[in-house]
Image (cartoon, rainbow, N blue to C red; front, side, top):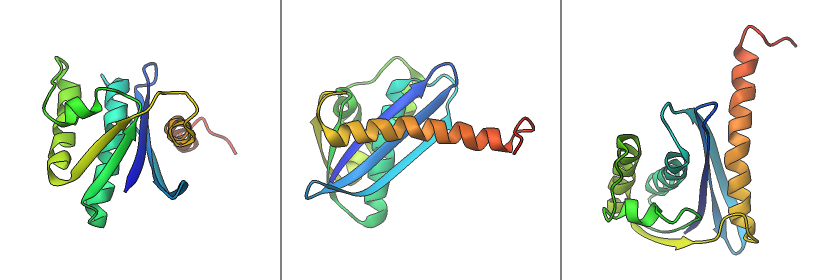
Length: 147
């Protein structure tokens, strides 16, 4: 299975957006996106969330072999125990990633961000859109929203 992943973090809002899409025969077969508030978060955590959600998806389906296509070069190093950071928040997400990585046969392919890779551009857009949708949902629940 081939899965493209990406994440976006908005410092001023403390919101991480993340997305992945399953690609087969050059077509998107499934897309997942989400967003959450993460205090003391950053773009690395948002990227890791995209991978974590993709690997959880594989686990839930019983898929054992997956290729993760990403644009953040540290993902394979964080997944394989090759690298830790000094940031305990990043390390807590890396720990989740490592657990999933050990359960599956995962390979990683790095692509350049914001270039002519249509699927990478798609998950980038979806991770950003997930933040927008999250904010709209929160706004509609607030006392300031009027129909």
